[in-house]
Image 1 (cartoon, helix red, strand yellow):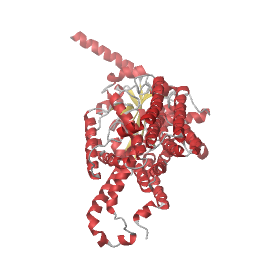
Image 2 (cartoon, one colour; image 1 turned 90 degrees about the vertical axis):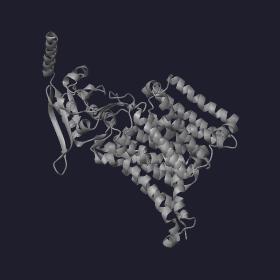
Image 3 (tube, helix red, strand yellow; image 1 turned 120 degrees about the vertical axis):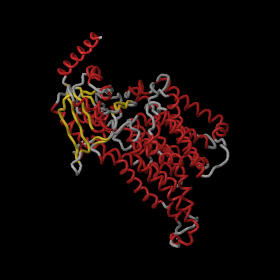
Length: 608
């Protein structure tokens, strides 16, 4: 009779396990796309670029929207455009539905990576299941954004890099995947390069001797990094000349030189002093703790870090963790604690150090972004990449905990005899509850935890879509329309002028007087507001969040603002669920109001 352990490790059983994991991953990432008319703060950018690519039949379009480099990473747009042309489906409907599928397909790739590194089907499968529900990864890859495609090709490239390190025949598939990654997303490419570089260094440390086989990954890293830097310098110029200098205190050229110094200098240091480097890295950190102790210690440390950012803004995004978000984050903290407790297991496994190198590269970048502060590589953006390798040590901890549920040779026939397992009942129950809670709670809090930060609400309702469609044909394309970032991007995609995130007093002022100069300077003609902006948050850009009160909203219902369009979505009880309103600014009346206000101030001065 086959034991549970044997059944778990069977190849057919493992691959069958990947099917539900991948399905759940796709469904979980698809929730926002199917429960809203559209989803994503930047969706309008990608929709607009794809529309222009189809219309102009050019790979790189003349981009006039917010930001400056989105048009140079066309893989997502090409996929969406191809499916739109083939199926005839509406592009705005189609785009948010595609990306979650691509994001969910990262699950089987992580399985292959872990299996190739650790040769352990159980750990590979559990790692994949954990990535299925990993909150930061789920949230980010739910978006129709270049980063989602970037995640797919990053993991595919890591898998092929590991295969290529052993078999040179994988060079061309690896180069193809790398080129697709470079064309997909610049930030993901950055994390990929630092990750595989660290993995290469650890692999060299683990080798008994340095041979010709070792030079192949070094050759690949030289080629891939050269392709990356060359593409940025020659094509995606804003990345090379703006993004890179924005993250470091020196020029882009110095950054390129620094990378190659680290790559070749690190290789030389390992070759010449491998024993010393290995001894330094593999330091003994003291007495061994149980898995439960490690989880509790890690949980406490991570929670204290979170508490710090309740009072101190997170660098880059200028945002504090709210008390509600702190509560929602407890399952996420448990997830990270489970990962931290599994590091010691990795240290004792063949190629476990490669995973630790992967984690360390991203973690060091995270520390740099927190300490340096003035960087385009924001601290919060590291988490979606860090969570991927952290699924692997978390799998070790989860498996170690779950093994208490079983004895070494329990068969299915013995499982039916409850009396033989009675002594394990209490332990089984407790551990089952803990593991189930970690998995289920992380699935539940994925979207509420981010919403609780009160920094952005990325839902786009049918009312907003209808309002923007009404604008197309009812107001001049030369008009400047003010709204939040989420809706402004869709407005831009329809060909209207937008304020490019330069509004703030428009939303915060209690009367037209407080925002007159801003509206005049930006030449605003119309204002689009929806229920999310009124009741939740007005996000006009990174680190720029405003909150409307009764007075700041009600000023739009009075002269010189005129309501020209309103659309509402009703529930079964005929109550409003979502709404959108378009206001026109009557500049003639506003000019008269300004004159009257000026005379009133003069009269007050005279009266004094």
